[in-house]
Image (cartoon, rainbow, N blue to C red; front, side):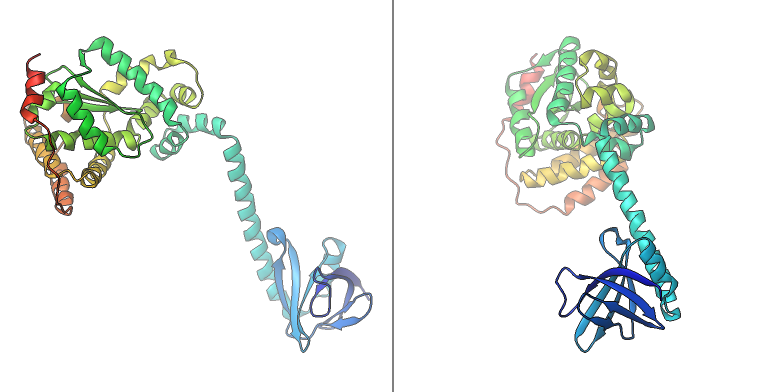
Amino acid sequence: MSTFTGRLFGPGLAGTGEPVTAHWLHDTLVCQTSTRSISATAPLRLREGGFNATQLNLTWSDADGDFVFGVDDGAARATFLAGLPAALQAELAQAQRGQSRVQRRFRWALVVVALVLAVPLVALTALVVRSDAVIAWLVDWVPPAQEAKLGDLVLAQTRAEMKVIETGPAVDAIRSLGEKLTPNTAYTYRWLVVDRPDTNALAAPGGVVLVFSGLLLAADTPEELAGVLAHEVAHAELRHGLQGVVKSAGVQAGAWLLGDVGGAVMSGVLADLLDMKFSRSAEEQADQEGLRRLAAARINPAGMVTFMDKLAKKDGGAKLPAWLSTHPASAERAAQLRLAAADLKGPWQAIGLDWAAVRQSVLRR
Ligand SMILES: [Zn+2]
């Protein structure tokens, strides 16, 4: 008679189970505790159990209640399996499939833990891969404060190369609208006007929003300016600019953003940033998120639609305004925007701005 050891749980036994010596008697499992003998009555069920499902448990019920016998690992398990009744062989195969499934899952969990521990290395590897999904994932690790340093660099470069208007009615107007569109933001926004005739605006990483004076003059109402700002802050909040930097600069940008390698390595990146083109899906995302922010601020989204219409009409012409090149407008995008805006219901709040005075202030210069 080949015996094997295990632990038996059931009525009248210690809650933590009792060590037993057991043997097969034909199709019956006979367990011997220190005080008594307990026989397993059919039907017996075989299940994987324990942490990581590496154990085999035999369960059965009789008049006293439910019993579970967990066979010990090693030689005991081999002896247990050697005597296993034919009726339980199919269940054994199923249990083992379950075990390998759980073990596979456990191995994956280990891989995930390893990945998390190895983030800096993985991040650099990911930068080599440069897929959009990987970049979006990586960008999630960049703290807003580090992103803001990138905004500082953009700002410094813009001030060096262009005439920046930092105070006055136009800056005040942009700030008051912009702040309504960015409640609870993680960024400290900076709102600036660039004195240039282009119909352009951009949101650099870290919440640096630049509106060209040409765009202020092209906007017939403050709602149209609000529409542009909503689109821009959506790019900032969705970190599209940061993703673009990482995509174009790769490993250097990743190292700079995750640690602090110093601004010098970023100088090449900045030139790209000012005329970075977002993907079509990023533009559509910024439109939708912009609309949502306008509605939340109770600003009539019709302004965003009419301004997009203007840009879309120019889209057919030979000479495109710059805003078209960095945020490609199209009749299709305008139509999508019109549809989405129609779903938003007012009432909207009037924007208390002297729009004529705002435009005059940038014209005079
Ligand atoms: Zn855009």
